[in-house]
Length: 325
Image (cartoon, rainbow, N blue to C red):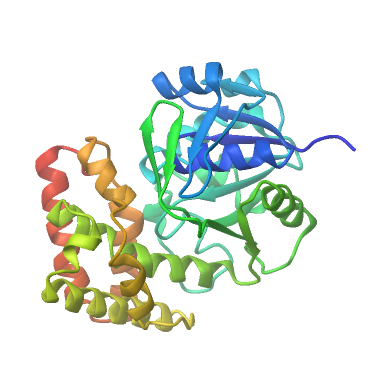
């Protein structure tokens, strides 16, 4: 049996970790990266520093040019949402008639409203390029739980051993293509779940993002420091309640008890990716994580005073830094 050909488009912290797991799982693994990260991966492979034993994996191909790789069985996109239009314009050489494309991004994904009646967020794909060049029919929804940081070119620190990907078809089916991707990543040591309700999985992860990332950007501190302030704990509880109410207004019922999240986060010094982006002067996922959530809240008449305030502060900081997408 031939090896699955899988390309990770965007081999930064999350993408690099996934690529290493794919290679460990036996896939013919390609990465698209740039700069020092690309040079390090091409020459030395990807080093994963885990809380237990670190490991290094070589990938089969590392490049900044998709045209050199050919058609893939799967493409896993791990760039931040402001870069998605650029990726859509360059991805064609990787796509055959049966290629699956999975997006490991934060916030409300561009495909979320496809097939749903009465809900539309055109700002998630304002020019339509993602629908034209990739299309919902190719798309496998994805949610990632993995606290990763690039600590040196080609070297990724992983904050904990609770690493997990949730993937799922937009129509809720358990498809052979989803199973094939889950199998190779499972062999590579990544926790995997195939969800029959990927939109619900999006909201479960979104609560975690909303309860940590924007507050970390505002303070410039990881949540372990922020949660020493009782007012921040109160803000997290309010955010969970408000975001849960938005989800419920869309017919998505999720657990909104923040206490397990607070218990896990109090001991973690990991900086959320939104704070990492801010500190590096990169555009943050404000549109998909905050603005889209608030647009849905307005659409459904749900009050979100804490989220409104937090989003306003994040926008002010991003605008002042010149990185508001």
